[in-house]
Length: 278
Image (tube, rainbow, N blue to C red; front, top):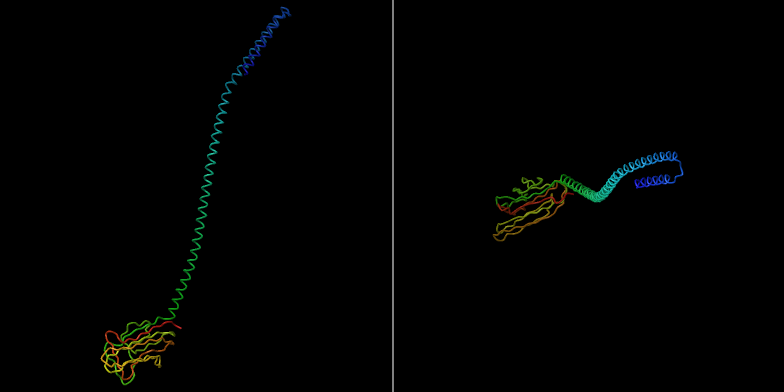
């Protein structure tokens, strides 16, 4: 565009110069002088036009470089915009993943808190159970275990005697707490409490009475006997619960004129044990 404008200005100047030469209104000298001036002006204008044309050509050469740079800048801007969009998408995805992780962490924390509460409950129960066990151990230590069971003899018949005798059950099966003495036949209560006692007496002699007494201290608590009219095996038994003080004794006696029997089959026995202490 600039080259065209310069070229048009040059044509206008040449046309004006030709118009002045054809008018004839000036003298020869003036004409020569004016001609010389005109030639100088024309030459100057031509040089100016050339310079302008060179400048325009230079600008024309520069313009494509500017457009190339602008295009490059535009491409860079587009690329940056695309990268920004991608980064935004990645950030949104990371935020979603972070929200999921936070939810899982919260859930895990709730589970941990619940497990801690349950553990505390279990520890409380365990402590309570341990205290109960310790209390039972103390009670057992304070109140000893007591139980005994013994058979009379392997010798066969015992009696009859003219006086009442204490039966010595010498075949000891069980004697926890060592409260029964096979030497004397007497059970001595180690603690105040409630005790259970049981006995069985066997007789085989024909036409004889057999039986036995159970005593608490000096008092007869039970007496069982029977008459064996024929030659047969006959037995009697009894059981009772007694409240004893510490040091009380329990034993069995054979009444005068009575006879009983025992053998390897342990048919005549005496047993007892502590139900609970008082």
